[in-house]
Each structure stands twice: as structure tokens, then as C-alpha cells.
Image (tube, rainbow, N blue to C red; front, side):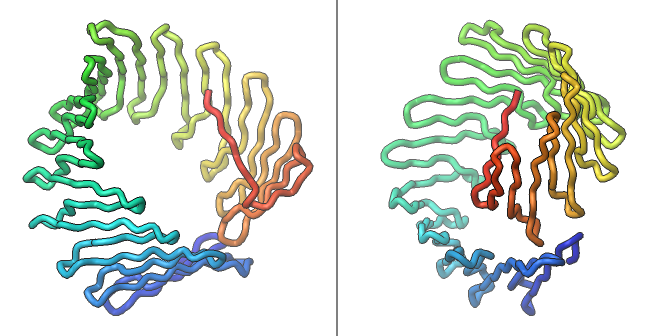
Amino acid sequence: MTEPGRTTTYAYDDHGRLLSQSSVGANSPVERNWVYTYTAQGLLETTDGPRTDVLDTAKYTYDTQGHLSSVTNALGHRTTLSNFDTSGHPQTLLDANNISSTLTYAPQGWLASISTAGSTTRFDYSAVGDITQITRGDGSALTYTWDDARRLTAITNNLGEKIEYSLDAMGNRTTQRLKDINGSLTKQNTWIYDELGRLLKSIGAGNQTRQQTYDLNGNPVLTIDPLSNTNNQAYDPLNRLIQNTDPLNGITQFDHDAQGNLTQVKDPRGVTTRYQYDGLGNLSQLISPDTHQHLPARRCRQHYTTD
């Protein structure tokens, strides 16, 4: 399979099972390889990942019935499953910390309870399999209410506090109401959508409104917050964000390479941060004038905030 700047090759055995996967950049010596092995019964036995600096192989074992009985990750952490019922469900789970849990199931195969260290969490279901209640070992519980279309409409805790949801015909949540133990409304949010199911307005309890408009490709192009501040976004023909104009008319510009990776960000001050990638699209270097440093990818950290 060939993508812009990258080629991926797959190999299979005579039974159609994936044996290996290799990805290489068009102009880079960097190559990533995955290798898979199977048991004589055709069950996945090992997966060896692309890292060469450390061992990154996961191992799987099975009992004589073909039930998955253990999973061991690259660090050697082993989880075992045993005591299978007649339907093949494990009734005992031993995690990597040697903590054992007992599992039970409903006649339909749904998980009914998990017991660990003397504490049991129970699960109840409707006739069609929607979970209706989770009860924890300390007695706390959450009850779930569903409509006839199997859409979640309410969550109630054991104290009587409740979250209620109203939905439109497309399943979008149009209203969320929080109620206290007396049934009094404490908070409400409302959402309005267009005929394509895209969010147009978000209205808070104080009638504060955030509005969103879109271009013909469905990209958000204008956001108006409750204080009437605006953000404008522009996109290239491939629907990649190329410009954002903030409420102070500050312009941030974004550039991308042929693979769609972000290569440059120029902020409203004119300061440019550049990103470099290897042939497989992995970030290899961040060049930031703010820090006056060229940082290798393993030292790069990105922080995001939401308003």
C-alpha cells in the first residue's frame, strides 16, 4: 500500500494470516516492522512491535479448548484468565499485581459481577442488554434509563441526584438537566443542531450562547462566544486548517506537508515554530524560537487548554 511519502508492505501465510507489516518513508532509511506468529491451531501467539531499542513483544497463551489463558506485555506483566464456564467466559482473572478477581455472568453472557478483595460490583441489564444499574461494593449505585431506541436518557445515583437528557431524531443531545435529591433543577444546558447534525448553538443555564457556523465541507469557520468574541478559521482544499483569526484580529497561520503533518505555525507576533518529521511521519524535531532551542522529538511536549 502506497501513501504520499510512505509505503507499507504486508505479508501473509497460506491461511491468510498476517505475518508481518513494514512501513518505510519514500526518502528516509527509517523502517518500522511488526511481526506476528501463531500457534499450531492458528491462534495469535506473539506480536513483535517496531521498536529496536527495547523488547516490545506481547505473548498470548491458550488452554486446550482455545480459550485465551494469559497475556504478557513487553514489560513482562502477565494477566491470566482461567476457570472458564461452558460458554467460554473466564470466571477467574489474575492481574499482573497478583490480585485475583472472580467474574460471574448472566444467562445471556453479559458480565453480572466482579468480586475483588471482598468487594463486589454488580451489573443489571434490561431485556435487550442495556445496562440499567451498577452497584458497587460500598453500596453506591448508578441507575441508567433508556428510551425505546436504546438511547441513554437519564443517570440517577443512589442519593437521588439525576442527570436527564433529551435527544432529537438523530440522537443528538439537545438538553441536559441536572437535578438534586428533591428533583429541583440545578443546572441546564441546551444544544441546537442543523439538519446535518452539526452543532450550531450551545446555550448555558444563564442563556449564555456560543454559536458555530460551517463551510460547505463541514469545517467550522466561525465561532462566536457568549461575549460576542469571534474566531475565524480558514482551510485549504484538503480541509486542513491554515489560518485562525482571534477576537483581537491576531492571525495564526498553519502549514502542512504532503502527508498532512503540521510543519509550521506562525503566531500573531510573527514568531514561527517548525516541526520536522521522518519518512514515516513521526515527529523528529521541534524548532522553537521561543526557547531558542532545537528539541528532538523525545523531548517535545505539547500542552493544550480548553476554554
